[in-house]
Amino acid sequence: MTFADLGLSEETLRAVTESGYTEPTPVQAQAIPPVLMNRDLIAIAQTGTGKTASFVLPMIDVLAHGRARAMMPRSLILEPTRELAAQVAENFEKYGKYHKLSMALLIGGVSMGDQTAALAKGVDVLIATPGRLMDLFKRGKILLSGCSILVIDEADRMLDMGFIPDIEEICTKLPTTRQTLLFSATMPAPIKKLADRFLSNPKQIEVARAGMNNLLIEQRLVETTARGKRDTLKALLAAEDVRTAIIFSNRKTTVRDLAEHLQRSGMKAGQIHGDMEQAERLRELDRFKDGTINILVASDVAARGLDIKGVSHVFNYDIPWHPDDYVHRIGRTGRAGATGKAFSLVTPDDAEAVANIEKLTKSKIERVGKAPVAVPEPDAPASPAEPVRPPRRRTRGDRPAPAEPSAPVEAVAPTPQRPAREERPARPTPVSPAPVMPPSSARPAPVRPVQDRDDGPDEGWNGPFPAFLSVALTTPSAD
Image (cartoon, rainbow, N blue to C red; front, side, top):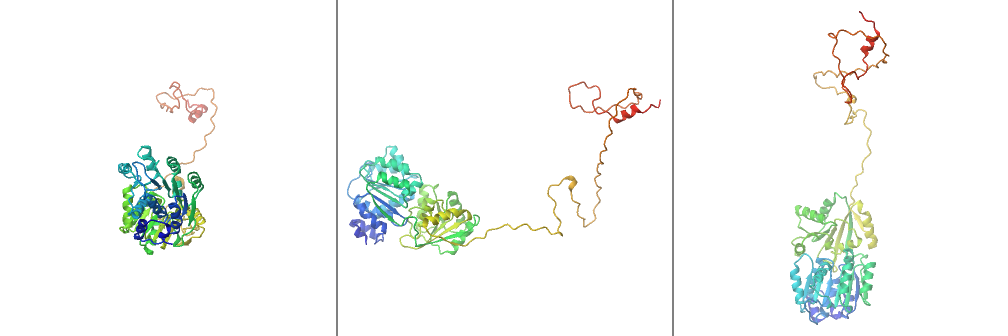
């Protein structure tokens, strides 16, 4: 089958031929005819199957007849990310170059003034992310009552990003008599509910569900440790014949750190993640496409739909949290009949995530390069010839004897030990005869003990009864 058999116009066929394509992919062969017949469509297709062209090509022919009005786009394509929206816009420019169709791109991170100016002139095709579209709609800058075609692309990704409520609200703003095309890699229950509510008698096609493996991609799990990931990755980059590679990580901070580390190692690496401005992200993609850099470190913002030709390798620096994302990540290679390789670095903590991926793909992924796991050895008994080191904290009376010095040193006198305190005799009961005291001139001044309280006079004795007084009381006087 050729594209000419699908009913496309001469102008569209000419643009497709000049792009280097002669035969449609399975999803294109099944989707283009019903779209040209103005039927609603549900297409379940794995990434990399050419589904973008399956709605772009027929839409160009359908919209070829008609005139756009100010602020009222004739068609709307919803995309989950800025990169996907920009890629769809490139497809319209490439395949619609022989048609006089106007187009506007509504995405965040760029000037809103240019976008509103384009809408004011009237557009045939509006490509937008839900957030920016709703923002302009609430500002009164756009009307959706003239939209006759709605495309919901990457619907399951929309679900993951929390856009389903926005999509439902957008659908209520559109005319009820419209054509709706829904494309998704999977069909979870919320997407099925969305399709049942807003699509009318759709034709459903299914090509290469996300749970099916792409046989053109060689997949490997490389076992390593959390600390050894960087070294393992650099070893793979050096050992493999890497022409162009995308390295995926779960966190934006890891993307930045890893890209800078690879650059310091002398590699031509770039980065793309959600914290970058849109202009920076597009600039990095252009550098990757034109060969200025051959390694792109990315978060999952680049996992869906980006059609970059010639990617030879995909590396999962982190195992994705959702098994569907694994299929979309490795789908950046092995596209359009080409072969590719996908390596995933796994640690013992990734066991559950890997099991979920293998359950989804219904296949066992080969494991290579098992990293040794350090197992602590049991403590060996101390040799009797070796002195046992005393504990670090010791009491004063529990110090070990000092070692015999190798040279004579000055002897230090040992600290005298305080003798044990003798038990005091019981206090005798005083007798009635008054003691004969020595004259006051020979009597020493009594030492007054410190008082514990200050609640009485300072006169009198308030300490323990002295022993010498008891002797004086019981011994006869010499006088």
